[in-house]
Length: 424
Image 1 (tube, helix red, strand yellow):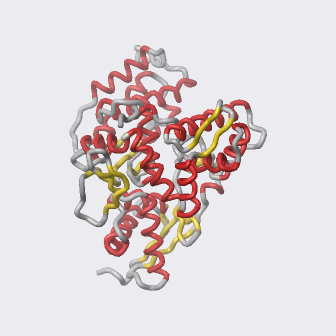
Image 2 (cartoon, one colour):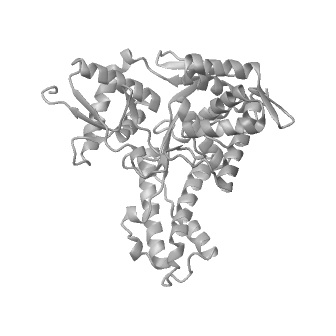
Image 3 (tube, helix red, strand yellow):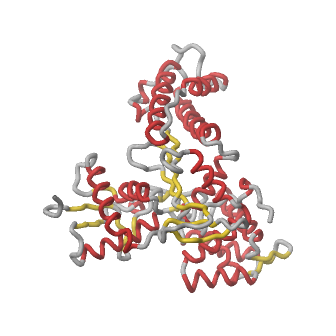
């Protein structure tokens, strides 16, 4: 079977969109009615057009821009569902479920979203082979820390340049050099390569001058209204440089993002923009492609035409319990050095443990739930306290950029660990 181009994937992130569409088609057959139900379910599940879930509910009387955005996403989900033979469409007015669509919808309702998502995985990989290609790219790009990619970027403020002090082209050049040096350090730390990015940095300065955002004369002040545009140019330049020149991904950043964040939901990759002490994005694999594995820690979820298989790293709790608790404690105390409180951010702790164990967010949540049960029963040598600070929905945030962890049916987002009289 000829695979579709990796960049031709439709533009939406959340696998829940497939369920939302299929559920709407099960209920209605006319395009307009399906769309109206799609809107309702989309909002109920907090599905946005970005890679983050929405915390706010939009009003019923959507603006033309909002409505067009909803219709675009709706069309994209329809197109991909047609590709997978989940639905049939007649003259653009009527849609119905195929047998495959009916079966996969029943799977969701009888077995839950996880089994549904794994079936969607099979359809995506049969059509695009994208996860395999990106896994190969990750492992080839970094053999020092296998599969780890970083996209470091630091604002002027994070490098000690106050906005009020950044006024001239010379100030921007000073920032660019500091940024270059910091990126070089991160590359050495995470990728194990000693690089000199001076010539690359000169390219972005040249582009800023050519576009009229900066003057060739370093003493001339730039228009302060252009400050955000200038800093965004730095961010976009370095992210694209790393993706295309450093890691050699041949397609757009948007296609990379779509596959990475879909894969994150499935447990194929982990991706974060909030890894402690790294400003930027981190991506690493939580799966492998191989003909076979000799460890029970890997679960086979897809078989390719050449008999190689996609395996997710999902160790059984009984085999990983001691290692998980040890890493949880070590990471907690390492992170606590930068906190003034006994409690620390649970999402930050999750990032570190996921990285060290090469597990998904979903698996982390399952492990922490198991550890917490043992803790409540007095069966651990440590004491874990999980609490709720302000959850994202209690703030003015529009998007949920870091998922809290569901423990015992409740979201928790801060954690404290007590090892008094239990070690040493």
